[in-house]
Length: 429
Ligand code: PMP
Image (cartoon, rainbow, N blue to C red; front, side, top):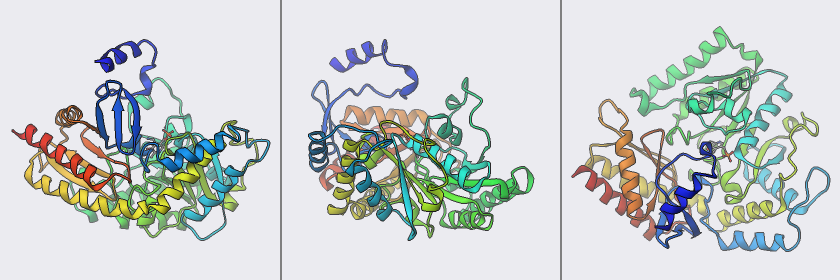
């Protein structure tokens, strides 16, 4: 096939550290939920470029908005002069993010730089040095966001020292802990208290940054009690609460923002990926008084707030509103979850089905009692699914990542789920 040859040739030119190798899917074009490879074969996209295309590939309204902007101006840096789409998008973001207080917005190019901004702003505003993040989190690949992350030794080895002053606490992962929810909440809150009591003075902590649903850790939904208790601890100690909504925001979880599943208004929020339907744009939205704590050029990128990317983002938000995709994500997510839960009773190797919205993690295990991960079986499943026309991957070693476009039709959703059922049946037999 052309695809095999392409991948062979590509190895000579493409740096190895920017891709996690799976099967050889060479995408030529895409529309909605369908990817077409260079041999003309079609695939249903179940991961939407790591949750970056929530409104589906080449949504006509997004494409039209970008074309209209391209006919006027491709770029001028917001560092010096003003363009309308930047301000329109900033205003819109202050309106659709949680919190009934004055907010301001800073733009960047990737989720990574947005999380760097959170570190800078939290330190500047609180005048405190330390940041708390989570074990198994992924926040990006710039030095700052990589230092927040704790998911892979490949993001540490050979590149240290990283940004100092960042500590990692356990994320409450009830399935992996294999304990009751109450025990996990208690242990994880105790871990924060121990940290404050032993080697990180609470009054020197600037912020906690949390993914309200942990994406790359395997679509882990934390217990509500945990998040609310952690938030209370932050408030008691003058610590800012920041949320990384890069992957889980923009309607993915059946709310506009994943933090809205909890009774919390974050001080800072980062977004990217689906914000621009995959175009390079990120934003940090924060309380105005926090956003006013830095001065230029503390966080300025020449191509940030690119007007074509802002037009894509404005159109994406409009599509989510008009097509009521937040609600659709909730309803379709519930439907898909029920179907996979039925399969959990049918197949011994499906240990857990979790997530909210069109945002599911299906954990493949060797043993339903011990919850031991089965990485090899997970890989077999995604390769077989690929052969049958599905683009899906595993994360956290053994978790099937199910994040289709929120625009996916019910017929496509059924086709995807039926095909996965066939793959599971083949694996069992
Ligand atoms: N935060 C989260 C939660 C993410 O999932 C990612 C990307 N996987 C990032 C930040 C980094 O975003 P980007 O790759 O756009 O820099």
